[in-house]
Length: 629
Image (tube, rainbow, N blue to C red; front, side, top):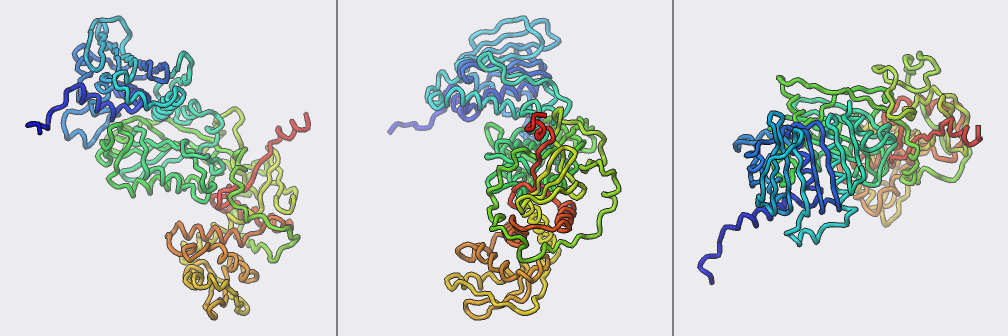
């Protein structure tokens, strides 16, 4: 055995280990260098890459620049201008702070830095290889900094071996660039790859304008602005209408105090805000900015600073959830919505009384998605064998009509936001907002399942089952939260026979069935006695409705028991679905008008509880083009 087995690593080896933590791939280096530019006060940042970032990464900015001494010192490990003491870690106000990025990148590349302060006559150029400074000289350049990183990981072949294809690495760089650009709309950004321009983003006047620059006008036209400010936490940004959804969660962007993060609390809050609005397995688009006191969030929990820890995660979740959920509750107000959004890294200081919240206006428009039919398969139970009249009336009894809504001119077929004037469109011809259905002309019913309405913009088709299901679901949920689903007694008790193999599980879920509005009692080992059914449906079809609900339980009582509020919402979906009018049911004109009026008084009316669209629209121009007019 050797006498000494513990030793100090050479500086170069330690730097390469640190580089492995901070610089996972070329995209990590790009992110760190851009964040340094932003911390230096840059108003314009350009990025150039070759070979997926392995051959070259060049980041230039017009920031504050450095002196010769600072430029040399910045390449040493733990060198930083952003913190002075351990106490500074409790309230970090810059994107970078760890003092590892430049040194780590330099240790695994050939690095050349050119930098100049505006007050200096000349700039300074520093060249380093594998972390060792090889040369320093003066240079002529504009104020700012340019850093070139060549042959990244040239001296760490193991890391180089695990890089993906050039296209994949370039895509990761573009995604990191995209996130930073979205969070800093007042900064101009440019990204070129192998001589081809990927992004060329001038300074934007609003978050929505930057969103449109980065992700295109179509999705931008379908975003709703939200803003909820509570003591210590503010959540603001953009959220897609409920008729837009995506196969993955890659369209969700989350930022805390201007820093792009991947946080489970924030993602879960956004996803749950869309619960019952988009199909299961689909994901929304959202751009979320959370601003809070710096001392209430720990950003020093990951070497790449992509994760955070909240002092009160529950409060943050609550604010984000309600900010988006409340905005989605009524998507008719989307013609002109203004809110105050500041996405800078220091925006959290706006929560302090002494800070001026200088923010830009953010104007959004929302629309009905042209491809909203993508989620229709999520609720196949809505279709049934055609039945001209069905077994029971709709039982839609409208409340007193909202007279104010009907005092507006009939030409205003769409409900506009009373706070705004004309809409500022995300495109030249923005899609129409969600309409006030009851104010549109009823053309009739198609295929005994779809209600046809005429609008100023074209033809609207409403799925009667999806519409009635949403109305019923919201009524049931409101009753449940107000103390319990109301029950209407049967004229005479009705026995309901159970499958003997499943009877014990059903008997074990009697309390849940009663909570859903069914007044039931055991009546022998394989029979229930039904004495009342949910009042919203009436007692006529109560036995069939109860049977359908039992069939929806699954293989055991876990289909009903456990899961808290989320489980009850799933049961409410089933109850609303089984109790709603089906496709194949011919409706009288009075029933159609009653359904439309109820729908207009319902929150989240654009989608059924399973996420399927309530309506689709065929634009007038689309129809006329089909006839070549």
